[in-house]
Every structure is written in C-alpha cells, then in structure tokens.
Amino acid sequence: MFQIAGGSIGLGLTTTIFSAAIPPFVDGIRAGFRLDAALSLVGLLIAVLFIGGRAFTRSPPPQSAG
Image (cartoon, rainbow, N blue to C red; front, top):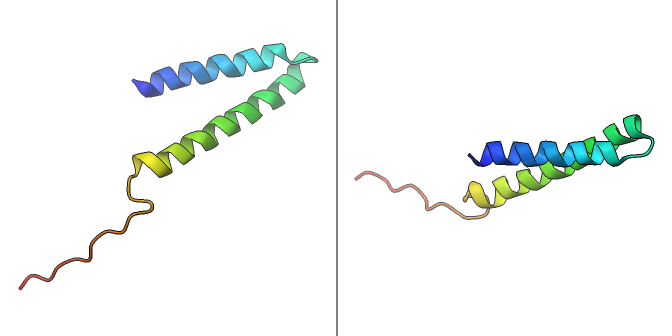
C-alpha cells in the first residue's frame, strides 16, 4: 500500500516540477530527474538504515552443536 501512495506522490511532485520549469521541456525534465534521484537516495538510506535492521549490529557467533 505504501508503494502505491509513494508512487502517486512521486509522480505528482515530478509533474509539478516539470510543469513549473521555464522553458518548460528540457529544464523540466532535468529538474524532474534530479528530484527523482534525490527521492530515490532518501528511500535507499531509509531502507538500509531502518528496514534491514542489521546494517550496524553484530550477530552473535554460531554455537556449535555438541
């Protein structure tokens, strides 16, 4: 569900940035791609730091059976 909402918000923001640029086409595409790159980096940081959960924690050593 979050992916659908995130995609809708990203598409809306990119379209707004694209439409607001003057001259509209080339500068709008460039600004939209920069926004998309920034949003993807933020998403990557969130995924690495919070969703994975094991990026900076040590796991206990495996115990031998016997």
